[in-house]
Every structure is written in C-alpha cells, then in structure tokens.
Length: 247
Image 1 (tube, rainbow, N blue to C red):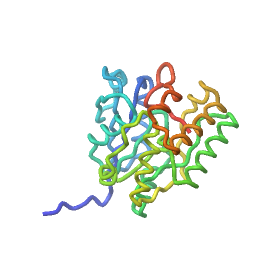
Image 2: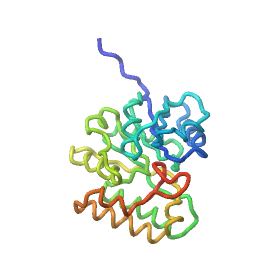
Image 3: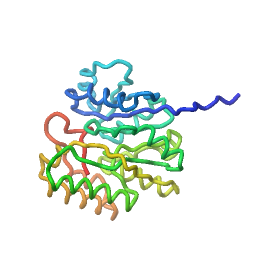
C-alpha cells in the first residue's frame, strides 16, 4: 500500500557550522521562529571532529552530528541525516526572511527544482549594499545564486543529483549547474536573506567583491576549485569556517 503524502510538506534546515559556538543557539531559534506553524526539523553539522559547536548547543530536538570539514561534505552529511520532504541549506551567519518556508514550498510547487532568496548584507556600508544588490541581480539574470542565499530543494531532486559536489569551494555553483544541466528551473525569490558582512569587513569590501567575481569567472572557465581555494582562505577566529557568508 502506498503511503499518503503529507498535505503540508516537512522541512529540514541543514546548518553547516565550524567555530560557531557563540551563536549556534541563536540560529536554531531563528529557524524555528521563521518556521513557526510548519513542520521544521533542524540539522546542525559540525565540521570540527571534536564537536566544539555542538558542545555549546543547548536547544533540544536538534539533529546534531559531526562530519569531515568542508561545506559540501557537511551539507551532504546533514541531508543524509535529515527526514524532511524539502531541504533548506542555511549558513550559520544568514537569517531568513519572514514567510521563507511558505515561499519556498510555493516555488517548488510551481515547478522550481532549486530555489534561493535575494541577498542583503548586514551592514550600512554603501559599497556592500551595492555588492549585495549586484549579487541578487546576477543570480536572477543568470539563474546562479550562491549558497548564502539559502538553497532549497525537494529531497528527491537533491538525491537524484548526488548532492553537493565534493569541492573545497564553488560547491554551490556546481550544484546549480547540475540542476540546469538536468533541465531544472532555478528560482530566485524576492524575499531577502540577511548575511553577515564579516568576510568583507575583514578582507576589504572592494577586494573581496572583485576576488569573488574573479573566482567565479575562473571556475566558469574550467579552473579546478582546488586550485582556486588557495585564494579563498578561511577567516581567522570564531566563525571563520563553514558558516561564513559571501556574495
């Protein structure tokens, strides 16, 4: 006998973390508040084998696990452990807009294979606001969002594509390309996620923006991600790993 499908889809929010002990409870609370009234599972995947971020997690009801470091590996491990109909990948320093889960469900029901949100950065710096607007415009024109725009997909589509390619960087771009090669539609929603500007602030707004564009261009031209990763070092200190944002 075939099981009846839920009338309301369940969501699994997969959060890759590394060095996020100070803020892990806050991001779990955020996912639950935005998902209030929805069936939302939170999955936290720590890239630290010692589980330092998980040790600081005090919220109950969270699926918590460790994996080898690297955002692609962590997100794939989280997806494998998740039980939701829809997977939403949330970086630890990104906050979702109100109604995010309802909007994601509607986009997938309308035929999107992969969706993401528009981007804002948590800053008052005019250049960075312009950079975020440019990233959103780029993602809409070329159907090419970055991972800090909170990807969401149906579980069966994600699994059919083999998940995120095991790359040190550009795993988000590679997944989007896989969706498009398979004939899937990529949808960018008008609601804006708000991402941290800490990488820009630490490494310089203009320099970081130009470097990101250069890395995307080189990757598009076939330069291996492993070679490009040396130009995208992790930030020093807490939060410098899998949870960092970037446009």
